[in-house]
Amino acid sequence: MAYADPVPLGAGAVPTTSPSYASMLGRSWSELPVRTRARFGVEREMVCYHGRVVASDCTLFGRFFRQLARLVGSPLPFDDTIGPATVVVMATGRGGSSWTRVYRRNAGRTQAIRSVKRFAGPTGLEEYLGAGLCMALRVRVENTSLLFESAGYSWAVGNLRIPFPNWLTPGRLLVRSTELAAPCFRFCLTLNHPRFGEVLRQEAVFEDPS
Image 1 (cartoon, helix red, strand yellow):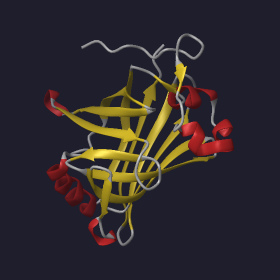
Image 2: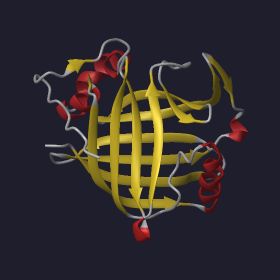
Image 3: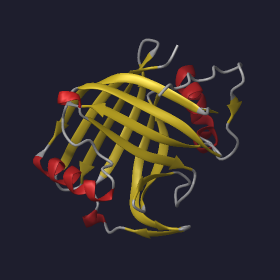
Image 4: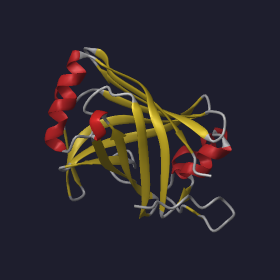
């Protein structure tokens, strides 16, 4: 399957209308590097990022939870394999986007994790993980990195959100996108449990298409 390269700013890309990451961040949006704003500030039909998982760690509790998560569509990596990874982002309208993360495992096996980021829910932004499971997100800028931080989990029934009690959740998910030397950027995901601390960490480096 062939994936289209992103449309550069000034070459037919259309700035996302409200709601958008820019409107949610306000003045903080201008603190982000130009390449980050280009990546998150326009709505593209499809873009494909190739890269590699460079670090992956998980505690015993983290391993138990990510296997349990397979019951709701496997929103977390199965294991700690280091190796090639691909992310495909497709526009879903009104600034929303579907994300497909493909991890290549040993012996030619792959795992595809699919989710949808959409401007909805109690914080105005959420990630739909599948099987009715939603994760509310807060977005902010920290040291020129773009951060997505979980703000609660719930079941979605139409526009209704039924929250999970804290003891049933895996803890705080934090995703950090940081620019490296062009055309690369770093993606770092951590999962922190209120009792067991950091139970999962994954770091990957991707490239913007030329």
